[in-house]
Image (tube, one colour):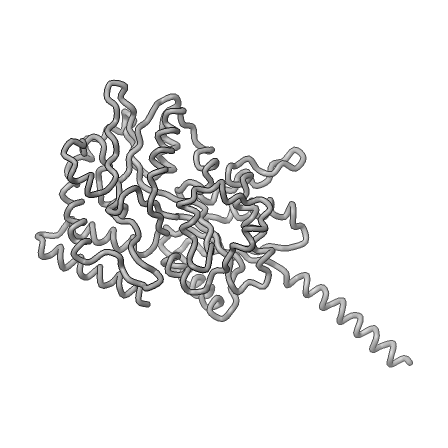
Length: 403
């Protein structure tokens, strides 16, 4: 009898211990870059209003390059072994990204398909997002990645009442062949940082092939170099001429001033944008519904517009600025201009420019290759050297796709 009582007590203790372990095990992990820590904490605080019984830990990629590489290797190893963080909220434009090319990664069964979860979302309204940007996270499997913020280089110029701005040419070929379009006045100068916007999609990631030939890339580099004259010196920054990313341009215009916005059109026509910040869920996660509930809050109108969830005298999630921290604007159409002041006329001009987005890429190592291609060709002695540079970098891009 005594033995039976002891065994019963031991069994009860084991059950209690296991129950406690189970609660401790249900801890979600979010992988973020080091400069997203404050935003992630704000997001978790807002999410835990609705989910008080689940803990969340941060897996932070350090700022220092050597430490970042060690952490990235550790995370990648965990993912390949069927584990890893539950959620990724990451930038693409850092020197040490977890995924060098998100679009290529989308073809490798690392990210969880989200369509069924989106249909049941409580706070996310897909219709509120820029469709071109949002749909860039889709493959044949459905929505794998949720774009948080995007960017492209913009020129903003004070509107001259005596001179209506010329219509931005639709395509790159229209631009360089349009003799009536005043390049010096309207075109963004200094292509060294902007040449990549001449292209739309670089690659077909299903077949892993580049969508441009080597000869075409050489031709486009040479065309851009021919336009990269002394136009930069003509920009009057003190008088309101602005050349920069969207987020900086939108925060710079003076109150009650009307601006004209321009951007480089692509070869395919329209404007190419880059996704700079994104969110996704690890396909290995044991708690997909709970993981998605965090993204549901992140992509809510309340968080994306900065209005926050009102609870008593506090607003939760009103300061979650992942996009702004990575120098991009949020993909939510009502939220993209909410942190900035624009006159009604400038807002209409910006929305008109934004409606011209026809291609969306995730910033990747291929963008770095294109930038290097342009810079080296700019310094090349002759066309033969330019051909060698383009051929070398083009082959490197092909090898990256084949890996």
